[in-house]
Image 1 (cartoon, rainbow, N blue to C red):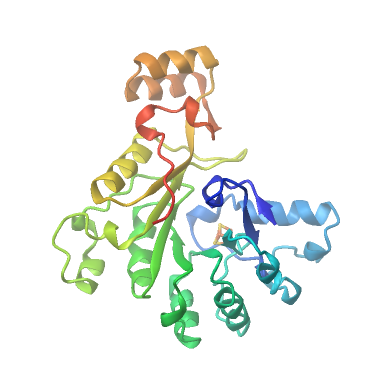
Image 2 (cartoon, protein in one colour):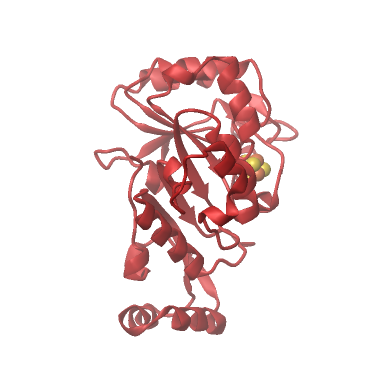
Length: 291
Ligand code: SF4
């Protein structure tokens, strides 16, 4: 179904798609505390949507009737796969069917995302996908340094194109080599301190949204943008925290403010989530697509 997710926009600027042959999940780490997909599933159930009409609308389920959908999209699309859950919550026979559909649609680009890269690797190997992945980006979500250090080495054992979703960003993240020893031993040729980051084809970053959103500092996001720029890795900033104050005040901060003023304004006025780059400091207005 067409999605408003900005980073899935098609090359011609039209809306990308989300495709959910699997829905549902269970929490695995701190990033799951305010799971967007779970809220959506419960909302859809309340709205009477058949797909979610179960006692637990967010239990893991396969939807065979969704399998063929991408085959009917004639125009090339960017497709987020099973964002209404974790595609690799467990390794199941249905992954073979989903991979098959993706291989039958080389015109589309599929973005897979998980917090369980070990399962992703198991499914990938089980269905011998190594040589079929030109139109598939394999991704992990990491909300802080510890989760990145835990998940990235697992993801990078899978050959192919890789991407990172650092959302919701709950702490600062450094890609500098000192924090990546498990990864370095897997890629012993890395010598530059940002070579680890260069194994990724794309990074998406954003603060948490929703009524229970947790704090995110602007400097954490800027630091990720800068590291990507230094490493030559495309970065897409999805949303940032802005002071919950007047547009005029934000314009003043943008004209004269430094980051400490931004933080002070947030301390004073609280914050809201902004998807509008016009409200962002210029150094953070970065929305590059995957290479
Ligand atoms: S892994 Fe993703 S889909 Fe699953 S509970 Fe956590 S945030 Fe929700």
